[in-house]
Length: 549
Image 1 (cartoon, rainbow, N blue to C red):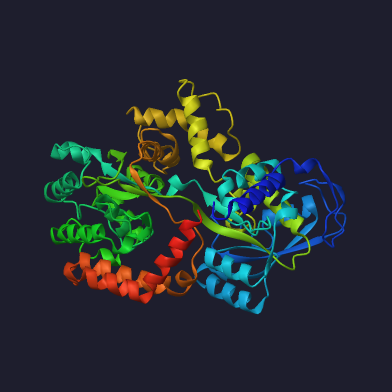
Image 2 (image 1 turned 30 degrees about the horizontal axis):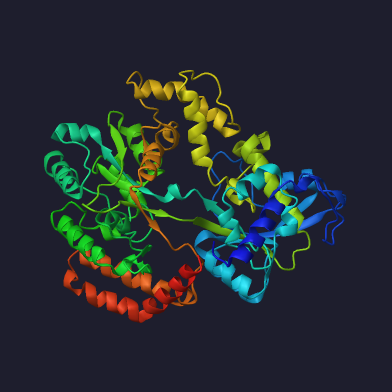
């Protein structure tokens, strides 16, 4: 995928070699360190200290972390020293809202750390400027767990492998189902208005109207200022009409077309404008963020949410915990006739881990990833917040891309036996504690006890219970109730230059059309402007990429 057949075979062969059983081979490290040579040991300790550097997008630690804990003295850094004799140093830290700017300055000056996680655009720039090195040799030091996680989807690794078989990044990618939108709806409200879970757009409009007019909901359908991404973005509602902003679909001629400017998008905006005029969408939605939506739900002013699975924990679980007597269900998003529903990504990459071209000890970086994987799976005392572990201060976090599916499957295999005392096979670490909630959760579901006031059962709602969020997400994919985004390549040259401008144009236009400030009749003018501002060039570049797939 993404390259000529010969290059692809070479790349995949090298990927399998690197992620295969290389822990058994004899190899002398090419680093200038005093690392022990001979048999590759993923958890071997250096005879002399080895330094590894990183940079940190700083966010606060949880309240459970002891006072005085800092990014420099937290548990992971201490364990790196104790177990490997690795001295980890932060080149700099920056608040989250200043991180990208500081990283840009560092990239321009060439003062880069040994390892860092970057965006797709930053990865491309570093690659083009030859500021990063391949991971191939370093990956030979990967633990079995890390190899398994990185190699779950070979197509992802191939997408960052050059024609010579060099793996230029380790992508943190995810099961693409994680981003799929579903509907969350209050069934106790449906009972009060004597209506069923809506399956079509017309039924959704009727239910939302009833919620507002009969039950006093402040709005019928959730919507925030997030237009193209985020919780309850406008794009998610537009999917119901067969409109897919941000996605590339295959047109009648076999070429990819951008969802932003398709006729279905105009129709979606027209209907959403009608919803807005009826008060089904809050008049001030353009000012609302995810926190505001959560407030509406928890204060029982909103009964319909379109969002990915995780919101059924962080939004709905919090509402149930506070109010106690509400009932919710999850379902596929309603669809207009002849449409496929939600959007599914072909490939979902969040970050790209890269190695500084001047890194002296790339294998030491992998050892830090190995330590993280061990923290995640074995959950030792050092991996607990009360002992100074702050996961978001770790420079080498890497999660199993299919962790939610694995957790769901392992728990449900045991749940189906009816034995909620025996720990399921295949779970460890913090998931063992989560299993301890199973009996009480299902007692609540059966109506025998109240819901936990701290929402500690929220993961059952979102991830485990087959009747709710993740189960519905699986159902949508199994039934093919989705449209596939067929572009999953890196940003094209024009995207890097113009995409921010085009997104701003799209977001402003959509919001104004939904609110009636810009007539829907001006959609064609917007589309022409989108094409002139770089859209035409992007279409050509995307289809040039598509022809090579």
